[in-house]
Length: 182
Image (cartoon, rainbow, N blue to C red; front, side, top):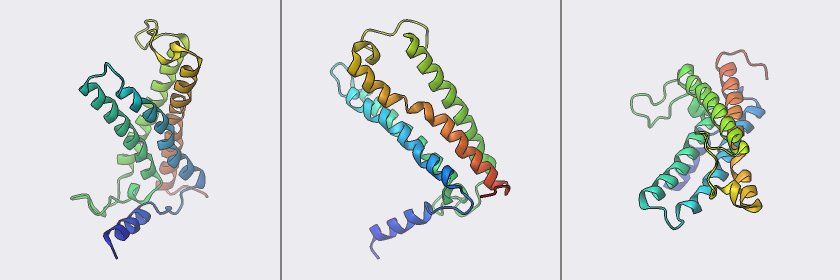
């Protein structure tokens, strides 16, 4: 077996459906990275506009990558690696993941993301920044109908990130407590 085959087998094993996970929770968990992806893809060309320095470019690219990686951690709430630490994790490999170690960050994250994106869009719709000042003239929603439509198409899915994470965290909590009827 080649190393590529071994990697594929390990990937399938780590992401195999876990007993007791309802289908809706799996769908919600795997949808979360796709709610974040459009905004990351929208930001990448912005990183390479004239007038953006090297550190600004690195920041924008890293922000897009880190946001996507954080969003992908929701899959752990429905995958095997959310119940047992992967074997390669030093000192913890193969041990059971304590429920609070996954549930507390997921619940806090869901709350923060819901409040953050709801308040951000409420302010954008009102035409002001988070600081309460008017949106700058070069903000995408201020430049024209097409740019505003593309901006909203890429950023509005972020409104789903927090609520989807909340329902996946709830499913994780119910399953790990053993009180799930499927």
